[in-house]
Image (cartoon, rainbow, N blue to C red; front, top):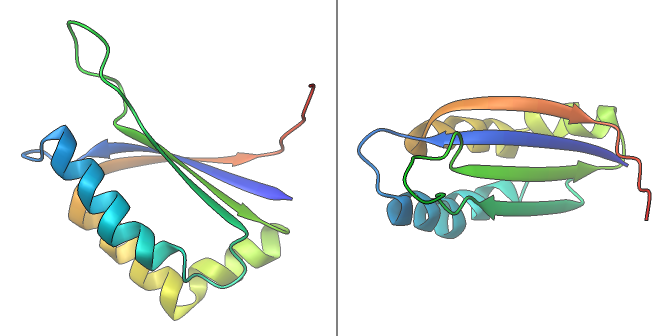
Amino acid sequence: MFKLIILLRKKTGLTDEQFATYWLETHALLAKKMPGLRRYVVNVVVPPPNREPDYNGVVELWFDNVGDMKRAFSSPEGRATQKDTETFTASLTTLYIDERSIM
């Protein structure tokens, strides 16, 4: 399995609730249509006390391999998902993950 983890910062002007609602109710519906996507996990960050979090969300996208990931993002569904990301995020940090389960 190949996993992609993306760290998201919400777009300026959105509340935490607006960010999470759009992501879960609109964007996730687009993302789950990407061909070859095996798993899609949304992690909404709970702000720590007395400060803003470094990131507002973390998403995990699972594919069988890197080739499937590339095909998914180059598909019409993948391009639509990427374009929609601009609607609710200010910035993204993308990590390609080689997961090694210990327990």
